[in-house]
Image 1 (cartoon, rainbow, N blue to C red):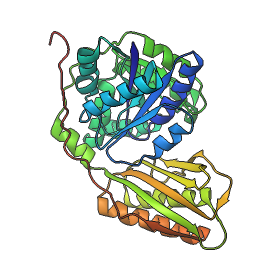
Image 2: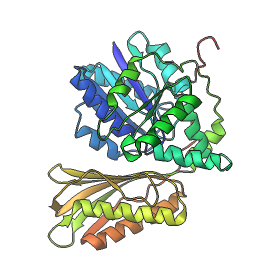
Image 3: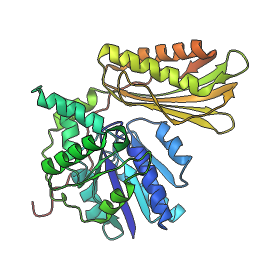
Length: 368
């Protein structure tokens, strides 16, 4: 019997880090664990990072699990047959919602004889939650992105507040209590996927009954689509060559994201996330990420070496027009080239806006 653990949550919440940390913890308990990443585009930075830590990894690209349901099932089957895994953790696209009806219930109905589907878990960034919450407290009209964020919380069996190491203990207690009061049918846990503190409470929550399984989410799909369409999505590859002998790989990546962060802050563009990996010829790579306009990038995997040449991959999800994101990234790359003595050549700009979500299945709760 396979255990399938579905994760959702807004862009930048730390789903991939949560998935990886949890998978390693489950392996220590004797489980054979695989993970599945998911994105609207292709060539995912996160997949490379996960593969550096775990053996069994797959990805579903070109759409969310709800619209690529059969691809998700095929990935699960392939992992279990080829790698003999007993547990699969899968993270949905960060702009996706309505997963109870479009993924969880269909899996239970059509594959329940061979699969146990764990409680649907929504991963939350406390700082992102605070930003949306403050806008609501000021009486601002609910934006489409805030609407999407709220729907992800409403349908959760488990609300997993990540990054508790980024806020104070008092702030954490207030946030957890507030979420428990507002979303009474969901279990609420707090942890840090980066440090590992509290991850055990998340594993315990996955073994508990799904307390919100009967939720019948009232999703305005036009508004849902509008929220996704606010974000420009870019997945781009670049070939990098040192103008001299070698260049600092991590410094180049940091400069790109610092420039992009400043541009977003100056233009009022919300950053869902921006992730960048730089791969050297010997298989090593650096990976940095950005989840807030005006903030410094985070070094998820630094590489303290210089290289004569390398390949970079940029994944950016920013609330702006695709053409604006293309220009911003091009300017950021040019700035990094000049700062580090690097020449770069890129694939053609590939920024786009996701299409209208059209799930393969949408099932109501049993008895509805």
